[in-house]
Image (cartoon, rainbow, N blue to C red; front, side, top):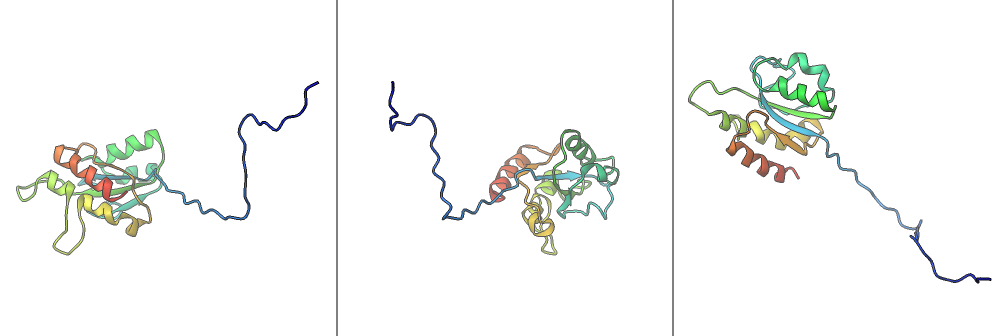
Length: 155
């Protein structure tokens, strides 16, 4: 007959109840998008201002039909229902600024961030911190390069 031995096979767990552990959850599902839509509802999607959308389907009717905002929100809502921070930028209509400059943005004459820069203030304005950034239909090489820079800043 075999005798019991002190050897142990498999996982062993030692749990202590003396130490409290703080686990901080990071919401990585918030999407930040920069889009155009000159016919979007200005109250729902003000220019160069981060706007938090918690139910994408509920604002599709206010997203307008021109530009990239409606198609972006529709594509997101077809796949999932995350929080989305939208920054609507104007469409380039004159030679003052190119579309790339409007999408990348900067600081306005009033001292407000515009374009991608507005995403830096999203958490202050909306309480949501975007982790996934995009500018669908507007992601030229300069914009794509800046998306990487802003993703690093928002990390």
